[in-house]
Figure 1 (cartoon, rainbow, N blue to C red):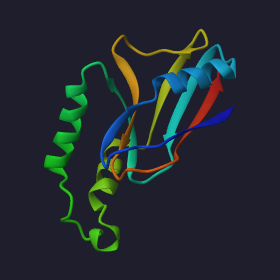
Figure 2: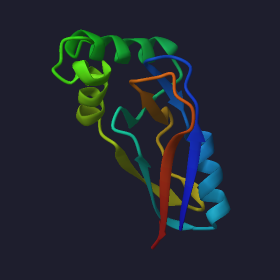
Figure 3: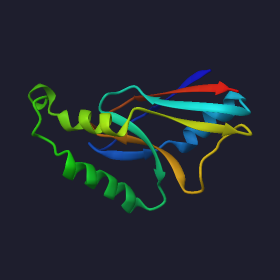
Figure 4: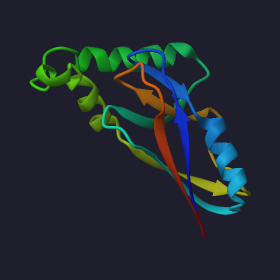
Length: 134
């Protein structure tokens, strides 16, 4: 089964917790045991699993990437000024898999599924979910 999540972002770089959205789609699927693949359909965004309880962690994550992959120094910037966003997306990754157990995503206590925006603000960022039963 496939489904999608659409989100809009407000900043150039931000992390958006989509765990509840993924949980809802998995519940709706009725799959008891299996895998949920989460795929970001954009080359300037990414997806991670991380803690989202402490907002400082999100700031630290974005700050780390800004220091190591700064904006405005890449050959691609002559086209649309977002070379750094493409590099960040490629380094972090565009997909991940989460196990499904008892019709729910099986994450650790502090783990959350987080969409990483590197070239916002944007409307209708699309995240494709492929839910596979065992």
